[in-house]
Image 1 (cartoon, rainbow, N blue to C red):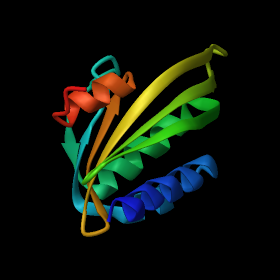
Image 2: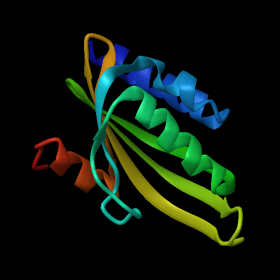
Image 3: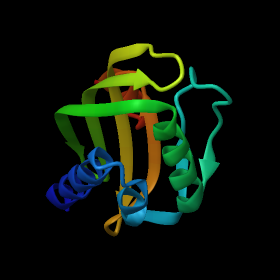
Amino acid sequence: MSEANIEIVRRMYEHFAKGDIARMAETMSEDVLCVTAPDQPDAQPFRGRAKFVAYGESWLEAFDSYEVEITELVDRGDWVIVVGSVRAHGRSSGVVVEDDYGWLYRLRDGMVVEYHECGSKEEALEAAGFTD
């Protein structure tokens, strides 16, 4: 099952790279739990695929470009940790952002049931309850 989970998450990022948040979210459950990074404006968890799509689309609208380069996909059973780097160019500010990042996905029956934005691989492992 873990290889299938890795492939689901990999495909999600292929859709993201095309700016297609709706297609990215097709493998999310209707009541997916989304936990945004604590350093984001108005950061609070929310539920729902439709809310994730609105969140993702509004996020991309704030940038002229937003690229994620995946450097590692970590299989932890029901959890998939994505490690990568972000390079983005702010639409109104013109600021270029470059940073390493981590994302965490929990899957059940081929659907993402939890999504967490994490600052690093270590933070993603901690959020999933892993201590190594």
